[in-house]
Amino acid sequence: MNNTSPLLITNPGESDRMEEKAVSLIYAAHRRGSVNKSMQLKKMRYTELTLLLSGNMEYGNENESFPLAPGDVLFLKQGSMRRRSQGRCVSDYVSFNFHLKRNFDFPPVIRGGVTPQIRTFLAALDNVLALEHRENSHEMIEGLILLILLSLEDELRQTRVHPLVLTIQQYLYQHLSEKITLADVAEHCFFSPAYCDNLFKAQTGKSIIDYLIDRRVEQAKPLLVQGVYSIGRIGRMTGFQDANYFSRQFKKRTGLTPTEYRRTFLVP
Image (tube, rainbow, N blue to C red; front, side):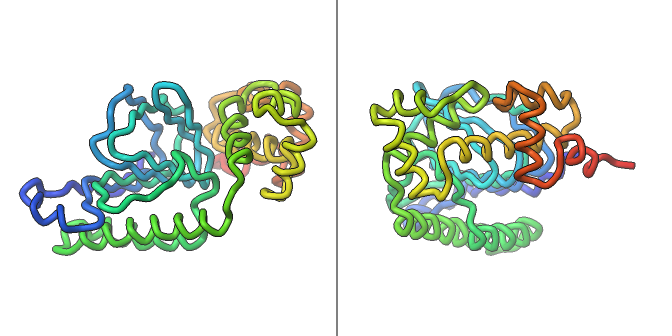
């Protein structure tokens, strides 16, 4: 079932007034239960902010891919290049297109950026989208976008993630379905394995391999719920070459085996 909230498009006749605002809305939507479609490489004429709540998505530019996991935020500035790969499973995400007067110095992907505070803003957004025809609905959404951006800015300022940690995270996401060792990560980053792992654990609270397995389990969840692929194939799709190892790691993190997790979502 595709449960999609209403879309909002700005009135082209308001262009003069839009110049004065910090955020000028073009489009907003909360899409649930849909498989996102591919987008060809194209230069952005606006800023995009997408917050992934469940499922997975993959964006990119000319040279890089930006796979998103649940809780990640995509921020693409006006003038940058964007493409999107065809989705593999249903997703739940919120997306905004807008013109932005103020500069926010964000990376393209903010890992784990959907904080509890931002989820509160998204709940408020759903209420506004349900009242799309209200006279001030656009202004209310523009205000929520600005609150989300300021919250992200504050979160990034507090965490001060080391650039090497961001590089490691990006490498893991780009090769999530492949065999990855600590030595592979270190070779990619030009630092020793011990230094990479120690710094990563100090900043994230997890070793590189534990973090990798966590992300693989999160990627497997929507594929299990979708019910299209076998357990073994889902394990291989998410980087687990051994089905028993996949089952053990999945249960360790969720309390359920992949089969048990799938059954909890089956309709009687």
